[in-house]
Image: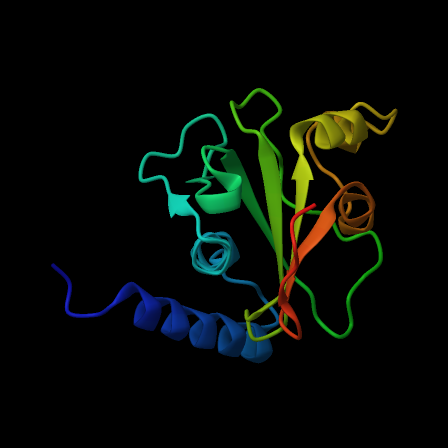
Length: 158
């Protein structure tokens, strides 16, 4: 058993990652773990201890039994156009992809979700990057639906 709760560790990780980025201009590779934690907390998912086949979490409630791949992106005020989400595992056994978009302090702003079918169709486009499992944030927003925002909370599932 640890002395610190996961919530406190994640909060400290957010603070350190944001400060590191402001101080050095470099990014610590922690956004994925923070996003997994946020997606599970906000959407009521159960995180997988053993991540295999691109599955980070299992859905509960409205997402009961869905196998979910969680991706993240930290956007800054000086964001560059064409920003991409991390490599997707096209051969994995997942059902949906959840994208957690965070601000410069690594706090979640929006969460989008896309079905496997939509993601596969987007990746089958002619772009060589898409064929390798990389999709731009703007394209992901087009093929997905907004499930949560910091301002309004959870959106109703359709």
